[in-house]
Image (tube, rainbow, N blue to C red):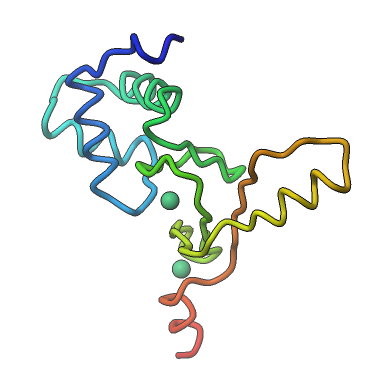
Length: 133
Ligand code: ZN
Ligand code: MN
């Protein structure tokens, strides 16, 4: 797909705005429910199709945590995530990317790494509190 020729349709703009206005890394179903309020006749299939196009355009990121459904991120810049194993929410982790990790791969293996994706997992602050009571 030619990136420069991909049009930003009204549907696509609405989906992008909904996604950029949340930090919850929602599923396609969640995005569908929100977008439907503005574009009532839109289908879930159209949402999926547009999410894939937006990802190809580099406007959003698809997060695949090996679960049955993908989550979507309105921030396309590489950053780390934390998934809570109890409530299944996904959070941004605001620490610098570990560039040494790429170098370790480049120096110790025949591969040339441009980047890496990392998912931390464990308990979020809310679920840690619930653990104590
Ligand atoms: Zn949690
Ligand atoms: Mn994120």
